[in-house]
Length: 273
Image (tube, rainbow, N blue to C red; front, side, top):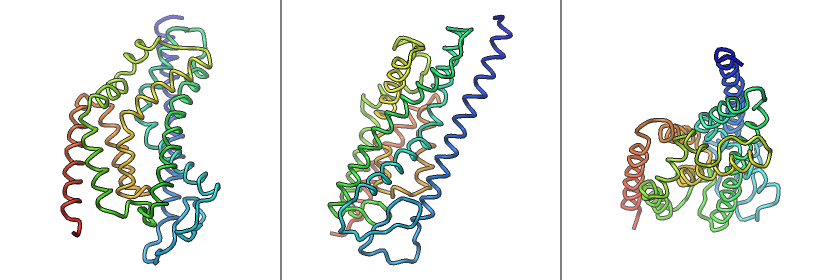
C-alpha cells in the first residue's frame, strides 16, 4: 500500500469512525433531552413525590421504596448521559487507535478492533453509572434528594463542591488527566494496538478507568445542581473537553477546582443557621 493510498484509507477511517461517534452522541443527547422535558414539572407541586427518569411521566410517592424497574431506569439514565458527555472527549483516543491499527496492519480492517476498544471504554463509564445509581438510591433514601434529583441540603451540597474542587488539584487527577490528554503516549505505554477481542476491550477499559479517575468528581457535581439539569450537563461536558483537548487543560482543571471551592464556601456561608 503506497503512502498516498494509505492516507486516503486513513481519511476514510476518520470519517466513518468520527461519524459513528457523532451519531452515538446525538442519540444519547436526544435521550437526555427527552428525559429532561419529561421531568420538567414547572408550576406543579411535587411535594411528597419523586419522578422516575423513564420519559413517560412516571411518579411515585417519595417514601415508597425503589423497585427494580426504577433502579434500571436510573442506571440507564446515567449510562446514556455518560456516553453523551464523555464520547466527544474520547473521540481523539478512538480515532488514534484506529489510525495506529491501520498503520500497524495496513491490509487489515481495524474497525472491529476499534469498536471493541470503544466498548471497553464505555464499559468503564457504565460501571461508574452503576455506582452513581447506587449513590443516588442511598441519598434519596436518606431524604436528601428533591424531586429534581438535586441535593436538598446546603451542607451536603457544599461538601461535595469543596471536595470536587480539592480533587482537581490532587496528583491522582494529574496522572489520570495526563493519560487522557495524550492518546499516542497512552497506546505506546500500554502495549500499542491490539487486534484480539480481549486485548481491545481490556485496553479500552483501562483507558476508560483513567478517564473515570479524571472526571468522576465532576459528574458528582450533578447531584448538587440537579442530575437532569441539561445546562449543567452541557457545561460539564464542555469542561471535560477543554481539560482533555487543550494545551492548558491542567490549568483549566485547577481553575475549575478553585471555582468549586469558592462555590462550596459561598453555599455554606449562605446556609441558614
